[in-house]
Length: 189
Image (cartoon, rainbow, N blue to C red; front, side, top):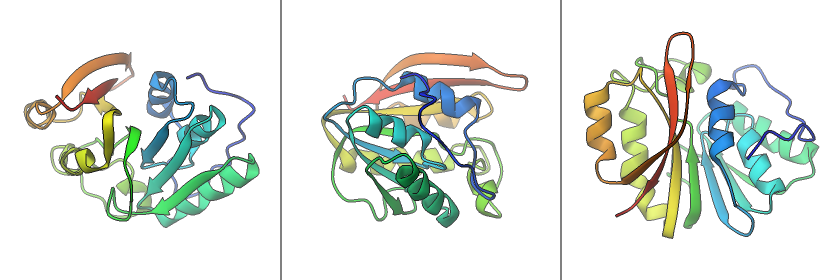
């Protein structure tokens, strides 16, 4: 799915803004019309809004209350229906979804505030992703899939281990100044 300039995003202080990783993940979303889509870690809501515009029934989730407000305001601004939920990953999420999209915090480090929480993935950069992948199957519809953004800044041994339970397909990658990012489609075997 390509970025649609008709969607107007207002950024907000203390909310992770759309960046290269966001747009790489957005590029990998396709064919969502009539599907249930869940975006975890929605930030400004840009991916959720694109999915809603394409005809999906969308739920957007973020642990950051500022991001929840920002995503709600962006949905209203664009006249799109998106259910926005304040939740730590799946804690307050109900239902099953055809597609779950996640741009996890992937840099090694600990979260100490709202904006740090959006990039700090724990000591090895994979702890948040590990929790996500453990909880995700209970929210995935039969035949559903996940799109997850990954980075070579994550410690690769634990990353490979936690992804081993899924069928994996690498969809796209992008080299940046200090890292390589890629998106994988994950399915249950």
